[in-house]
Image 1 (tube, one colour):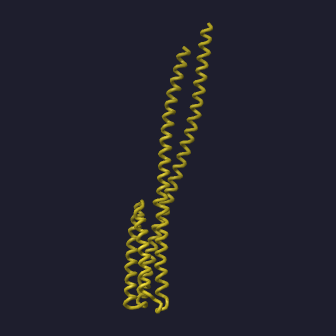
Image 2 (cartoon, rainbow, N blue to C red; image 1 turned 180 degrees about the vertical axis):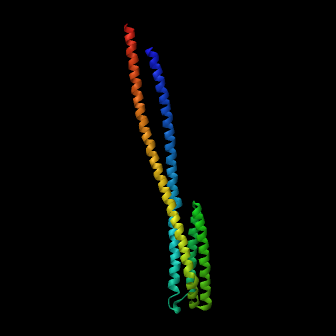
Image 3 (cartoon, one colour; image 1 turned 90 degrees about the vertical axis):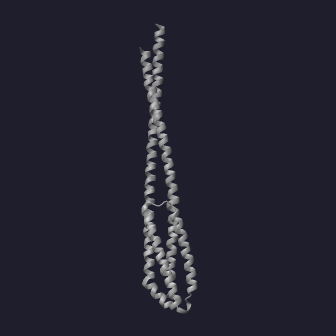
Length: 228
């Protein structure tokens, strides 16, 4: 009778151990998935946020350089004005901006970023068009005509373009903050998984002690039976 009871108890423990093993494997799977997601999140943060944010910074720097260049060149003494040198410098800055924008466009972009990037490209093309008009005015009418056109259109166009660039950088910051929150959530999930593993280890320890205790009880009962 006691032997049958012992076998029944051991079967219950075996089933429970099997369930614990299944839970352990599931937790392990969830941990691996969480680590993989965290790795992808960090890679995305570097490739799609940190590097592009740096590129946008250089785009902004070049845009400010163009604005400062016009402010400096168009308001210096007339005899120092060199339209060819201005055109050459603007060409280099515009090429650098175009290269950076193209590189930025290859990264992962959310819907807001795509829309804002499209607006920024339009603004850059408009600004370049006005710059060419200013250069043409300088060639035909001199620095005075170029200065009037810059004051009428150029300065405001540069301001709008820089504003669109700032908006894009703000979206970049928001997405980066969301990625950080997601990573923090994944870390907290791993902590929960670790706590479950510790709890399962404790349960397994208790079950092992139970199995050993049950075995000793059966052995003692069998010894008494043999003595009788």
